[in-house]
Length: 376
Image (tube, rainbow, N blue to C red; front, side, top):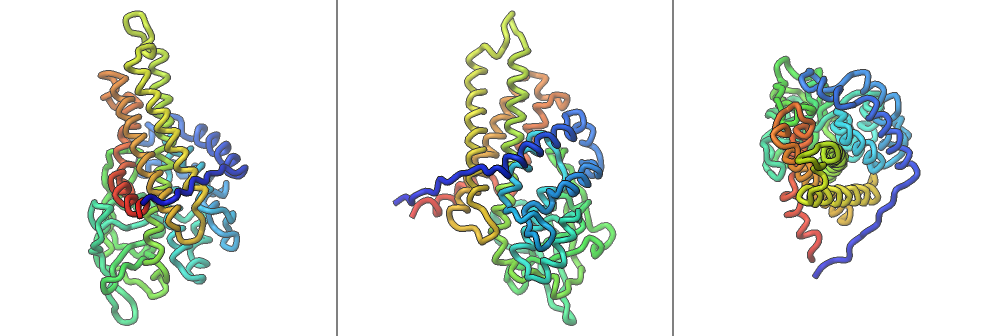
């Protein structure tokens, strides 16, 4: 028996203003030439751009006013992240936003007052979750062991986004078999603990981080971390979906521009039905993804995610990353032989698609978990 779906969707005046300002900012700061110039840099972004984002209040947008934030829910970040995806603007914003949500949802009052104001002021946070490359894995290899009133971390975390620039790590560890989130300052890591990795999407940065031997004080263990963890995974999936939706729109722009300028046999290649129909399919898939991400943004708030919100986040992630995969693939194919070279912008989008698909679980992972939510 199927359950009655919650189809609520709204787009507030605040979200509209955020989207307009974010579009202008991202377009000005991240044209395609700038994106390419940052591919081989150490951090993948410009420090002054991050400072401007902090000054605009974006790092505190989804956090309560009592910590210096703007008192808006995480849904308010969706227009920002969509615009970042559209212009391939890569900063630690997504990583830091999820880490801040971990403290907001998993920390006690003292922990929130300790760390959230510094993150709003620009301190960069990130999540260290993966012990292996399977987002569906349930085993936690990183352990937390008591010692002389404190605790000792032991284990390596894989593919930690923006680890090289992070000030704060939220680390998933096992304490006597119980999942636990602990806060580690970058200054606690021994030299050589961070091993940078080259990703298929070279606009992104991630590293393996060895936390072995790091001493954890009891007040650095998030009080409600285990309860918050499932929601944090879904928030990560939703933000990745929003970014992928923006990137799918950019890939579509690249396709349309090429189809309306490239001629073959005396005709614009966009006049051929074999190219028209897939282009329309991309538009439909991208519009569907936008519907899903803003539906999820409508439902999500600072409370624990209910069943409807879980469904919305999983549907958004599955649809958005599939839409980007299709758009990136068609962008490469439609450009012919040139599309398979790194000089063609289509290659940026197919690489982004391959990266985004596996962040916080791929489409198959989320559809598998949707089945018991949708069917009684």
